[in-house]
Length: 88
Image 1: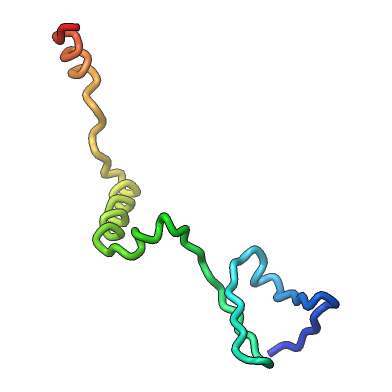
Image 2 (image 1 turned 180 degrees about the vertical axis):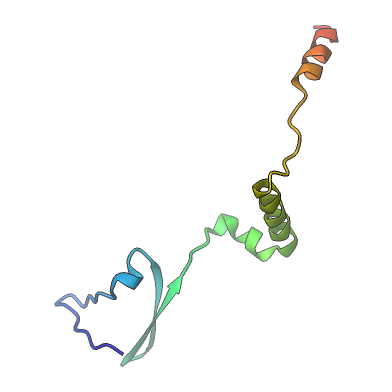
């Protein structure tokens, strides 16, 4: 436990461990405040964290990519041959 003093504007430094981190400040009562480290998820991405199947699929894909297991790219030569055979 450490004792610290706030400045004239009520600010308090938490120390290097909390530098550049997001925190939740929860007022428990008149004499107690709880500070919790947090990570913020943008609302438009929240569905992925709530959908276990989608999240698992993304994690599998990331593991495959990391291991070098990538899908084959398009066959450009075959596509060009098809384009040549098509009439305008």
